[in-house]
Image (cartoon, rainbow, N blue to C red; front, side, top):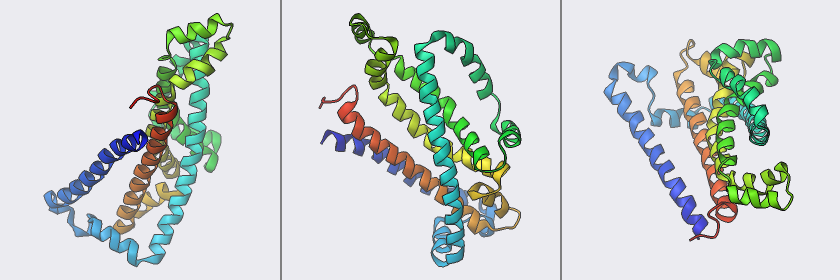
Length: 262
């Protein structure tokens, strides 16, 4: 029952946010009539376009599958790298002092500026897009996971050390369980980030997926396809965010720091 209550508290604001986005969409088109019906499409226009045009719907879904594949691989690589590096930084302070400034310096470089270098080094295919999506995921996740690992109880860490536990044992038995909320928070934030990275990589790199089709739709005046693609990728992003959040609440209800509390 506690898990259902937590899930409900998580999903309700998300549903309200979607409703507000829908109202903002309508209000924007009403407040700026100069956009015109040719360029500005309403939710009804998007629904009609997707429901009546089989070829357009299939083409958008095919591009969406490519983007989701790119984002999923980038998300997995970025989160795994963030977990490993965060564990190293927290366990070995000398490593953090040596490499954290470099990481922050790389993070300050705009992604648009990094993309040509990534494409040059890793190519225009799946590998290059994966690297870009992983970079978007990696840095925010790294900071959040490190914060979570350092939030572990000092007394619990000292107790494990008193019984002869190594620094890696203390990390596994105390720090990692304490960091679960931060890990899931990083995962939730990284899901939309991975999609953004994949879209950017497809636009500037691979030339496939929704990232490329969105750019091609503008000069060819395919505004129905443009709006439909944006709506679909937004809904998928929100859905994936919600799925991660539900999993987070189910796991933290049982294994989190507040497990067992009503």
